[in-house]
Length: 138
Image (cartoon, rainbow, N blue to C red; front, side, top):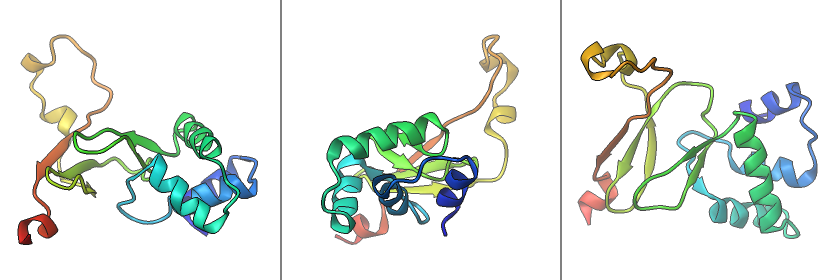
């Protein structure tokens, strides 16, 4: 069973067939799928699942803090199930591919006090942009 499914079970989340298939689609590393991509993959497993059910389930997962919404320039909003390990994103500027990255250091402590403008920092979202190997080869 995936970490996401296990965490949802531990929280007592009602696991209907539709919710389960959406959660199963989100299993794996570097998963950053749009709602439409999630719906297409879920419908391949459970043909009667509606787009509205997928959107509602994603909204619940985001509200629970189990999935992160990621916005990039080239793609529609994507959903990242790697919500419990701090990370940043690496995005291809050509195709929009997204990868999770875990650089060393702490971006909050790395920001000088003079650049905080009195803010109390809670977290940081960093997006690295570049060209993926697939786009570089083409």
